[in-house]
Length: 374
Image (tube, rainbow, N blue to C red; front, side):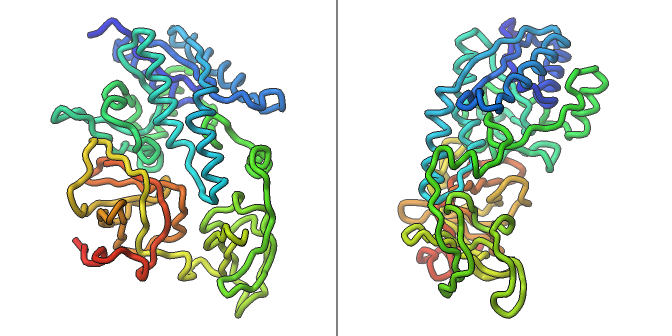
């Protein structure tokens, strides 16, 4: 056993605390590391990091492990937040948690840990790593409700080889029970939500601080004006809440949903009814595809995918098409949102994923893609 410690990212939450606990119980030397990655508005009453740090310190004291603090705010701004803003500026809906993992938690943090002489890093993610055939395989966790492989699909072999996920074989309920039985001071602390490292806040107000909002018309696919949007960046495909328009249009009073964005004319396209055809697509085009194993398939790949966190896995075929990849689903998918990620699985293993470039209709599918049925 190496005498070099494992550096555990202690966020102040119960998951990372139990990850450190399990490593300690396994007899491994452990160092806790608290990452501060956002300080842009600490003077405006949003300094949640102070409370998180206090919780991380209490956990480290309870486990009798050292705690180090490190500030990755500059890296977070350059590698994650600038991309986050550029995607919203382009009318897409990004997922910053994915880039936050690949660039901060498993790159900046890993580089820091290695510079300190660590044998590797550990986090409280719900995922498993299987080491076989000379490679690392990212596997689904034991808790399907908490599985976080969707957010980890951009990790590479080097990052996975240096990482541990001590919670991969546990459910959230079991994590809570372990925390309580060990007397961890944050055993009952509620889970954090919101933007990675930025936390919970009123999203529209927050985003408007960095991007100018440009209100415009909400229209039906036929061009009928039914309301006004507050800025295209505030809406995502499939959204129902917060549109500010009631029924009364068309043949009934069914609720309205966002179906598309017209950036050129600054129009938000809305439709009535969650079963509207414009909300359902048989396929999508991918950009920036990443393979955890490092090698893409040489031809069409029958697998499963999800286009949002916690979505049940969907049967599909991944098809090379010209300069990119097309995903054709066995069943049409609802609310395909450009900027989000499609992540691929086979036999419980996360293979990788890519960014959704656009939804495709049967008419816009690349030639030959409908032939790949198995």
